[in-house]
Amino acid sequence: MASGCDNWPVAEYLIITGLSGAGRSTAADTLEDRGWLVIDNLPPALIPKVSELVARPGSEKEKVVLVSGRGGAEYVEELTAAIEQLRHAGNHVGVLFLEADDDVLVRRFKGTRRRHPVAAGSVAEGIARERDVLQAIKRQADVVVDTSELNVHQLRDRVVELFEGSDPAGGMQTSVVSFGYKHGVPLEADLVLDCRFLPNPHWVDELRPKTGLDAPVREYVMAQPDTKDFLHRLDDLLELVLPGYDKEGKSYLTIAVGCTGGRHRSVVLAQEIADFMRAHGFEPSVHHRDLYR
Image (cartoon, rainbow, N blue to C red; front, side, top):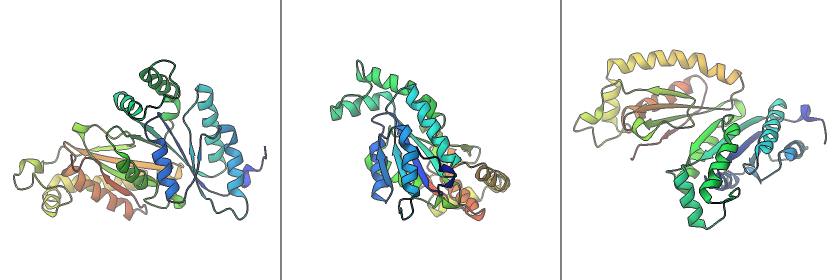
């Protein structure tokens, strides 16, 4: 194995891992269609060799997806070491972990009639074993996405928002997600902001059927005195933490802002927060998870 890793140029690597049936192939295919080099089921020991190939003069592949997930605890340890080696070489490395509820995964495997890759008995037993083994790598993930309620097209859109929404060559890639607490907090969130203390447009008859993307709802939310105070203090916080995360080498940052249903207040504030982040030199993608629920 060559030892010239310190001379590798900066490239972008995305490790896609997670539970079988959660959408690893769909996520990888989405990025491959957008020009990423995708390598599936590569043994971790060979990841440095891939880096050498990417670093060769004349190589045009600067965005690489490595799809992983099948293996035991030893495999996870080797993958962790390979990721650290890539980062030590100065490359931009992100880890995307995909998961889904057990009952959803069981239905997906029954629908495809495929055997679960680690099932010694039933599909449910295989899912439980794999979930346990992958906990270590999940804890290291930059982004965790629950695909339980996402169809193929929605997952593709989410992957594009997360990893093609801005150019990470300049540093940390950011996203803002609005959500409704009654639907659960987004798993990928690094910072969670609760705006349920603001008056709810849902209780205004003419605003209820609208969303935070409609001007009357935005005007209502922004007219609240507490909204202005909240955003002013939040801007000070973002001014502090965004450069700090970037300086510490964080690859991906997701800020989630939630209200009760995810259709009014959180949508308005997510748009405002994204504008604040742009003013601080970042280019976040914006995703309204529960807008049409």
